[in-house]
Image 1 (cartoon, one colour):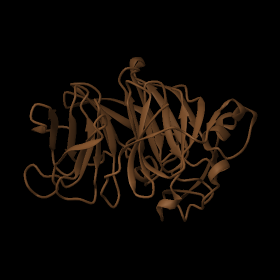
Image 2 (cartoon, rainbow, N blue to C red):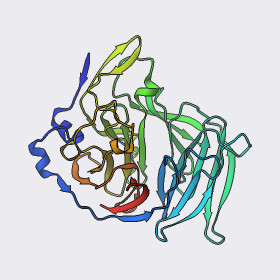
Image 3 (cartoon, rainbow, N blue to C red):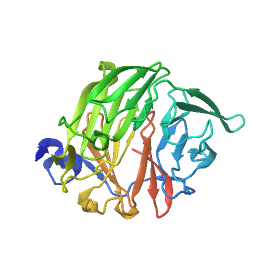
Image 4 (cartoon, rainbow, N blue to C red):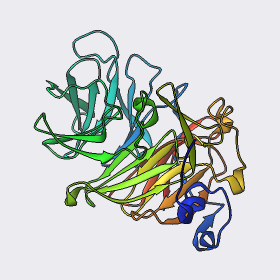
Length: 338
């Protein structure tokens, strides 16, 4: 059996126990927040992203107009667009990302199609621009457009977690796996949330299957800046890595970046109690209620305990506003200034 841990930061990252360090952490139990929209009609909202006053949210259960755009200032939906299907400009396995110059990308994992949607305020519509991409990779789980020419792929199957394309040509690979054992199932083990702050030139990765978070510096050839490893036990069984039952899965199930903070959606066990891994994800009631707010050195600064569970997060890297898809008791898009 393998065991990996970082004793000093363990309790801060997971909230599993009290330490003197936690006395420095601000706890907020009655936070001020705003309802941006209470008209989120879906069985399960997917990825949400913020840019230039618009929150985009995906409805993975819909086929027609599965992408939605909400004007956060007017607090109203301004557009619904993009379809799933077999047409030349339809999507079968869409992957969402933002354009650094404005606009919204949809990329199809099953075919070399990418469409940039640009908001045209003059006639209140999205204008689409489709192209055939050369760097088509079906094993990508997250995609980030860092600038006009560079696209970053999160590739959990690879020996390095990240692959950087420049003008459709594969280049830099970086990001050592936090678990180095040989295994047959790295795709399952190393999937996670990946976000980029273009002003700080920093990339943040948080694993979904075990407690791990890392920050990489793009100005220093994507060197590892800092990382936090929580406690996890595992073994290799017939070539597959299997975590022990007491390893908390999805500790940080969602992540958002703001100007000064990394925000993780996770369970504050001191307030919310623990939940068995078998019950996790079976109902909305099992979702966490708390936002753990870190600086970019991964120092925990505050814990915000919300009165309701949350499912999705996104942030504004120009300010310290975070947006969350809350269940209150129906789906609502809320905002909060950190």
